[in-house]
Image (cartoon, rainbow, N blue to C red; front, side, top):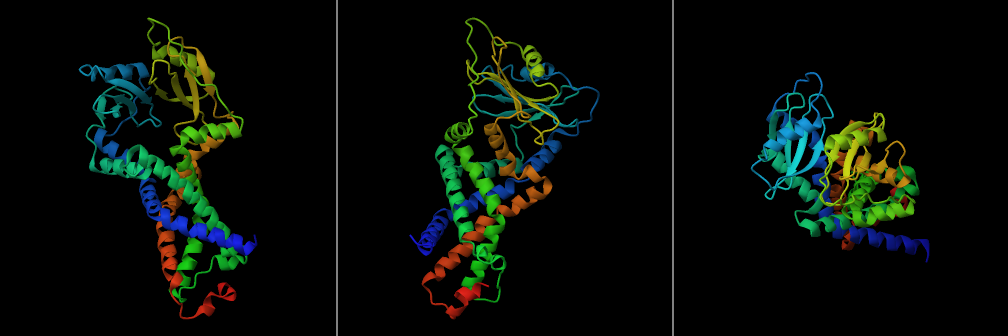
Length: 379
């Protein structure tokens, strides 16, 4: 097959994938742009809800905080403790997550110095409700598990679309041509120029966001594959059931976990969802960029035995790849500048679809001057 024939096949693939997935990619991109600064906006809303926290001495022990929140669920025997998120800053609250039959995720905000329950997420503000819908649209199109897989599939197709677009970029023949936009040319040419420039300038970032989204939405396949390819398999952490014995108290478990990661700071506790699940305790080393950290200690919930330790400072290759997904997807790897950039990256599918659609519409129309689309005209 000649290079021209290969290029023709790739061009056809690029065109029809774009037309097929364009509208959904636009929805994913626009909602992604809205979510870039969601955490800051949510923190601002939470601050308005619970008020200002003034640091006073040492923070309360986790057990004290848990006992305080537990009292508020005395009349709800079905309530189950799910997670504990510790404050990452002195003026932030503890976030104690509970689940009930009516609500599978309830954030309870607790003053870290007085132990007072400051509020919860049962009555969200209009902005919080808006972002909840935007988030669900972004990752599942409000279509549940089916939508979740559709979004994952679109992510893979957009990756193919991006790679084929980079291959077709005319700048490979002459660099300046790849970045030139002739605004006074025929509409088809103008749209082509905008399409090629917008595509090549954001292509890498589109790959970051859509590929990581694809991997997350098909995590049951992607993670085992990544671990297999990188020889980074891990033993599953499972608790051994002991008849008649209740799970150990959290205080004892924390005393066992902390020495496994000396120098790391406690960030959260993930309580077992099943009788044979492990207790997962999350830590952050000062060298880590992410506030939540990526170091974990897995403990048998009955015996307290250390089942596995994931040290973010000594990661396996598979862990490095998987841990990179979060900063690559959210644009946090370069701080504020890359996060601002990601707002515009989210707009790119809209620009590419519109310009690509216009070019497709012109495919059967005669152009006023065909000479402007000759090989020399791209210079």
